[in-house]
Image 1 (cartoon, rainbow, N blue to C red):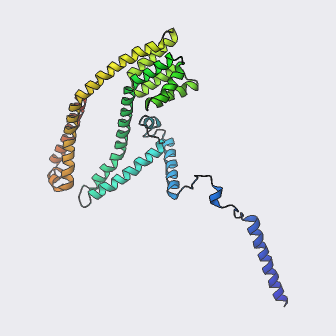
Image 2 (image 1 turned 120 degrees about the vertical axis):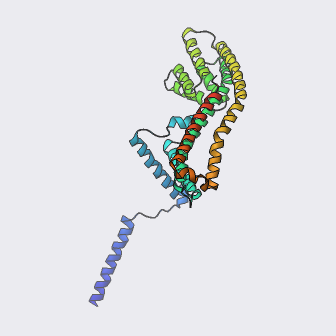
Image 3 (image 1 turned 180 degrees about the horizontal axis):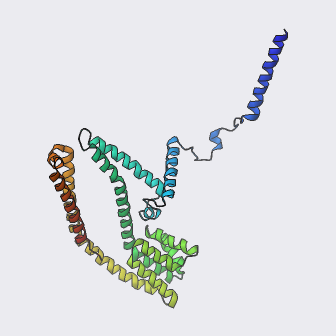
Length: 318
């Protein structure tokens, strides 16, 4: 009987200790449901999101150790891509892996499996760089086309009695992108203490616009010597409008030559790619001897030189 009482006391003591641990050491369960404790619209990150965030942080640390990113923030901003460089690098790496798999599948069972995989994977960074260049060039061209309208808005704001900064701010709200973003950037830089002339010249350099550089210089001279700035902007806008008309005419006349150049450049590459995918044995003689390899190398060099030559000939600098 005494043993039963002893064991019962030990059991009660252990149960009391367990209750103390659960109530004191372990956190209590929330009384309010988790769905009600979250902010409206707040959703927990998924496993894929956590994995992507961790990968982006790793890439960012690698870029910081290296000191230079393959795609910097200025290039992405000029291309109007709202991403941070590490996230864009992650997208390029993912595209390279996907293209490598595609190249491996296309070359399965042939001797070109590995070369195709490497070539397809290498296309991702080059394609990304080309994409950024093309988007930035398109953005700069659109900025140049909107310049005469932008100057008209600036001159109208000055004639209405606004200051130059207020006129630039009003123009940034009226005109379309990319001029709206560039003018808003000038306003923000001026408000935090940068000289407006420097901000305007920096915009001209970023957009590679000689016409806007003239505008910045005209504004800087007017701020020093005084005068009717709205009239000056009207005259500059009229000159730029005439230059734009001539430039559009020149581009329309050179469009046929540019299209012919692209056809001549891409035709050999397209025929070679089609034959190597459909009839791999067709080029066995070339890859099987040193003279065939030298002939292919010479053909590639001549194609590159001819492509550069044609692009220089059809490019009209105005």
